[in-house]
Length: 107
Image 1 (cartoon, rainbow, N blue to C red):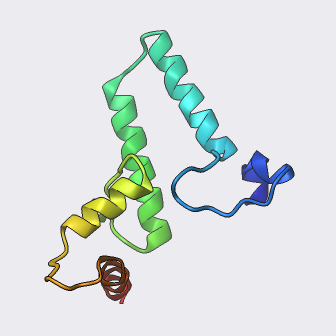
Image 2: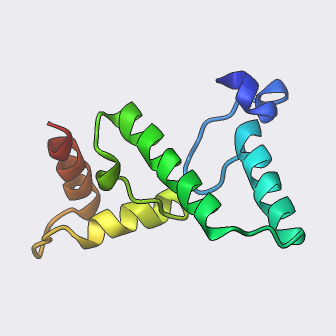
């Protein structure tokens, strides 16, 4: 895992979701995507297949179905989507409520 994050050669890195270094594989994927876009080879079918393959891979890691995986731009937006779907009541501690809801969703 550390070899996938070049930043760990110079620093100890503790993720805090606000900002993060990119793993080498993410950099390579972005470079591939932008190269395709620069040369006009943005075939929708290719990117749809790539997205579906990624969803299946993530689903396998999480023991879920690919239909349960929704790509989002970042962790903060994903947590926001989950939080907005919860039924808060006046006086609830939102952070504690969110963490408990996520914990129980896994059970």
